[in-house]
Length: 252
Image (tube, rainbow, N blue to C red; front, side):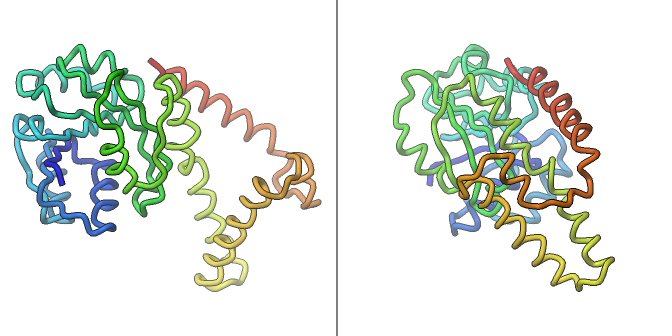
């Protein structure tokens, strides 16, 4: 495995390391840096094989993941440009900051952008990726990224849409599903029964929506009683307002 550096040791780095570990990939060649030493140490406790290193060391690895939020990326890239190797591959995991912008800041043409998905935690991610023009061995890079789950190439202009429609998608619903487990327990099911009931029904519901061949109205009409139907317009408006608004903030 090539040497890998992570600039940032937060949630997405933990997801990636867990995905590698699930596939029995050694973490010995992986170094991480974070401005918050406490966060790095917590990551080290969970993944003892990794190395906590300084920014210069991490930035000079063969593959460097930029695991930072958009507001801090530009300053961080400015601080590493003197350490950057022309042969290193830089993979940005953030929306908004384009390949062209990253390349102009660090003087490196080997740039990849990937929108990660939390479901990569169990190697079932849905991860769109874009390569800089003229990028070399795409196959080798894709082979590595496929460890995370379904990974596919797309136009850079679509990455922010995937961030809204895929990467952030679970967070719109997870809290509701956990609430349903709690409600099922409150009305008489055991915890195990509640979890199984919600899980099995959700999985089957997804199949009905996408595999039944029914139109949207026909799917919705399969259940005559709609306990929260009177709130449907309000819920749709919240989703539209919040998510389109967020998209407009993160697009380049």
